[in-house]
Length: 104
Image 1 (cartoon, one colour):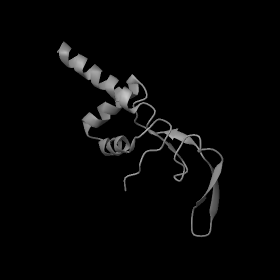
Image 2 (cartoon, helix red, strand yellow):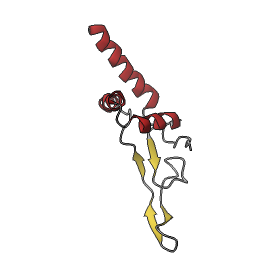
Image 3 (cartoon, helix red, strand yellow):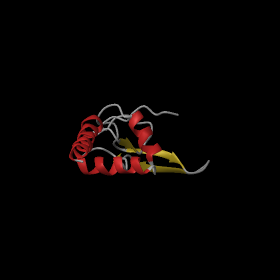
Image 4 (cartoon, one colour):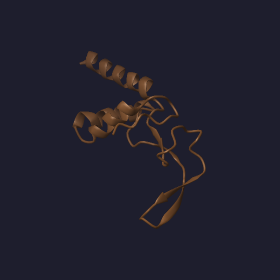
């Protein structure tokens, strides 16, 4: 039992090391880095309505920035609920403070 707990702890530490700071995104999908995610941008609500929005650099709901959220994220994956989004976020993760490649 103790070996299993050590293995779980190692998984969480590994996840933090691999993915820390890589689960962020800008509210403007055309921006790829944190440094460029400033100012405002235009979005279209309907065909003729234009809205001005502020760019924000946000963290995804499930991430690995610390051990607590690593436990939470791996718990979500193990329960089978919400794991596809975590999977895609993990695949798209590239570097800290940079939006990952978007898989279509």
